[in-house]
Image 1 (cartoon, rainbow, N blue to C red):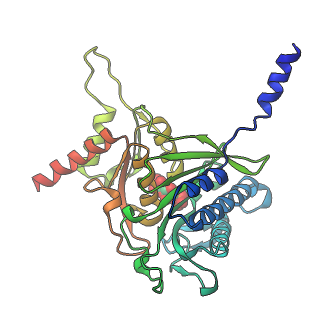
Image 2 (cartoon, rainbow, N blue to C red; image 1 turned 180 degrees about the horizontal axis):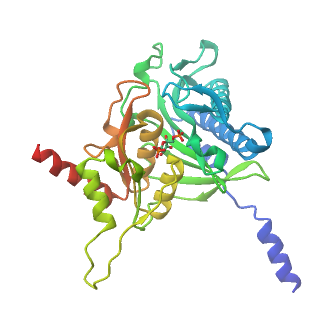
Image 3 (cartoon, protein in one colour; image 1 turned 135 degrees about the vertical axis):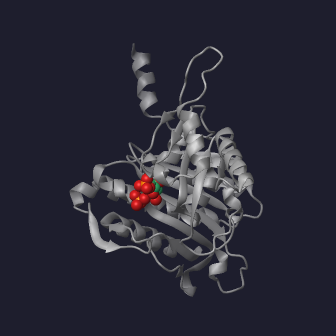
Length: 346
Ligand code: AFP
């Protein structure tokens, strides 16, 4: 009896957790070339995400719910939390001393960090993606992609960020949902790790090691836009809703799930499996499509425009948009095959 209660006390007092801070530090220590700059930058991003998480949780109480009355460069209504989150990201990234260029969904132009604080990294981010879901308490998130400047001696320029996604060094997102989870990957690592914020100690703790796409058959798309879908997307959606009966005669259509926050829809797609589609050019390449594509590929899936690998796209401007399909490789390949067939008929 006494030993049982001792054991359960130990359960509550686990001390063998891996924190995000320790994980990225040990990654740095394993690399011969690492200078520690990326570690410091990721630590600044993690602090910003903790701060944003806190603001999101208290938004209703702090009366920062609702729109500012203005619109951003994308002509979308700006929420008060969008502005706060953007300020938090910009301030912490600039003060980290490790960034040269910041590209935010909220800012028309790129921010070039002043000489005294300039570092070697460029961060493209959406400080609060899915913000139209804020007022009803649905999951939202921060998305980021990181590049290293092309030439360390040269003055940073827009060319440092208008590059294919394959040149990112790391990418991640932080989801503010039933818990706050930061998901991170590094170029070439083939590993995606998820860290859950333990608010009592203020640390992200490794809870999802080496995430790989789940096996479920789920499709995720805003079907209210069906009138705009091309034949490839229409055909694919029909095929998952009305599949031929299997050899047992059982009819098993896919399950539909759609949150309307890319972070939440992609997070579910990774954990459970399936495919997320946003055809038509709405989602932004640099801070929505690229980071999610790097993460999904590292988790064993694929991300495509429908016609080419997402990460091979070269954005023409900061806020360039693209259609995207991502998720389980077989599903993405089935959609690509439909585009190939469609194009062959032209
Ligand atoms: P908001 O930030 O304006 O809510 O947009 C969210 C988003 O960029 C992305 O997170 C969603 O996947 C997508 O747009 C949802 O778009 P629809 O509302 O057209 O479905």
